[in-house]
Each structure stands twice: as structure tokens, then as C-alpha cells.
Length: 179
Figure: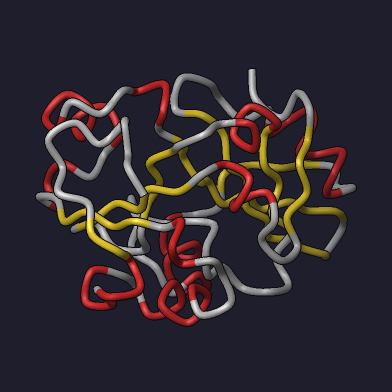
């Protein structure tokens, strides 16, 4: 696949480079059309979206961020993930709180998100998340022809089409998830 958003990245077939992926991502790729998933090695110090885009020349508008949210209702806790364009913010206290049917929702503590996802902070990706987590994808992400997302580690990025993400198990495309 030809990636127009790659900037100066060298994009390789993700299926051929498991060393550039977190273990849960490698396992999840086995169920996907891997011909539509690329991976590019990056400097782990440049994994944060703004620094990554500036250094590698990949457009910010083609980056999507996966955030882990923790919702609480009484003594019950619910973890979920949401994927929004990097140029937007997830509506955690509105749309996500209602979707999770919780009284309070906030970003999950870093340690918990890392431990339960099996991925590195700053590299968490929707591909390979725990099967019992709801995955909410903003409609703009689902409609994007090409995106850069995390790979589960800070040392690489995945390049994927939005429709592949929208078709992930447990994914739900949500209009207005991002503001």
C-alpha cells in the first residue's frame, strides 16, 4: 500500500515486523487484513503526537490518539478506549460518560492503562486491546483514508485506513465523540 501521510518514515508491512509491535498487537493483527497495515520505526523520544508529526513530516490531521477511559458508577468500574483525531479531544464527560452508563468518567491512570492493555504509555493502540473493553471510534477517524496510530510501543507507529479500525472487534463508530 502507498502511504501519502508517511512523511519521511520508512513504512514496512506490519505482519513482517513483529519486533516493532507490542505482543497484543501482534496477536490481533493475525485476524486483520494485514496488507492494509504498515509499521514504521521511530525514535521513542518522539512518540508523542506533536513531536512525531513535526520531526517526521506526517500531518497532524492524519494522526489519531487512543485514550483509555475509566468510568465509575457506585462500586463498579468500567474501562474503555476511544480513538479520536489528534486535532480533537474526546468528549469524556459527555458522550463517553453516557456510552459507559457511568456517573463519572476520566482518563484511566497511566499505570492501570499500561498494565491492563499490555502496551506502553504513549503507544497504546486500538489494535490488540482487551476484548472486554468497549472501543469507541469517532466518525472522522472511521472515515479517514489513512491514519497514523500507536503500535503498542513507543518505538514505532502503525499506518492504517480508518475503515479497518472501525471494523475491529467490539468497535463502535460514534458521531460527536470528539470535539
